[in-house]
Image 1 (tube, one colour):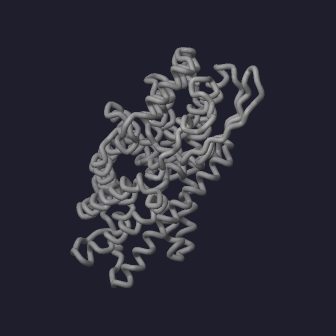
Image 2 (cartoon, one colour):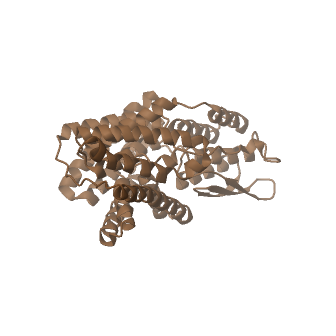
Image 3 (spheres, rainbow, N blue to C red):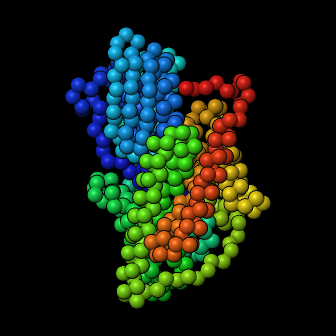
Length: 428
């Protein structure tokens, strides 16, 4: 559904620390630092390239920009000199909605002539130097709350919710610890999957707590599931950003495999100890409780995406609109067409909110799509393949692909809908 790999980055070397790098106060240096900042805070390839193109043209520069999950290539054509090519090495992105909002504002102000490049560069430096938005205990608690709510959305009872809360808290603490330990960060999905599965398998055997293991494991790992990356990868492929989309898709599959490996390893150890997987079926729960769980999960996503507290209303609007729509649309049209309808709805809401309230569309798209993306289904597919259940794995993988394509098609269709002329002024 979401993934922390999008939220964790290794500290990157500032361009200011690189010998002979272009002056940050000059147009060329500003363009390079703007591109790096937009990538770092989670902007997709096609949006980043559009923004950089608009900014360079406003300053009289020509540019050819190519954004990949781990690098940005720019060939810049100055008005009075020879073209030059730059390669910026970056990590696969940190989802930080607030810094992204501020950075896109800086880009727009420079494009509109409200800031010069020196002022813009200073703003970027201030944005990058701001401290952590939320303390670690809030982040860990948010992990726990989201896992609890997702367990309810998956029709889990009180036992499933309690165990998912504990697993989510532990996963959150491991994820926080990985920020300063690169090797732990690289193995984070596998380690967390091993821990989550081990806890789930031991609860009934050693503590007498009856739970549905699959619900608990998926709920506890929900923040690590790269469903959002999967959807972005498909969107980049659909917009002809083939290299970026393929690279991001490969990274997504790698994360899924790590998660499945961790769970399979824990299951093998449990089997050697005589522990058995519980296959108890969950019972239907009241829709109002699931709707409430979606609302609470949306609020818990605010610190996970490093958004402002005052933006909580936008997270609620996006998540509840998406969840309510997908529930009723899926009942009427099936999962695929339901996802298509919801993607159109979320895309239109994001477009209108961006125009009216001057906030990045990511503030609507991320919490809205996080209810929809097929991360949990993708995890079940890879796990089935690891357990040599090829038929079930391929069938589930096909379901993931269909839902993902439906989401992307709906999002792209929503982008084609024209807005009224009085609010349709482009920012870039």
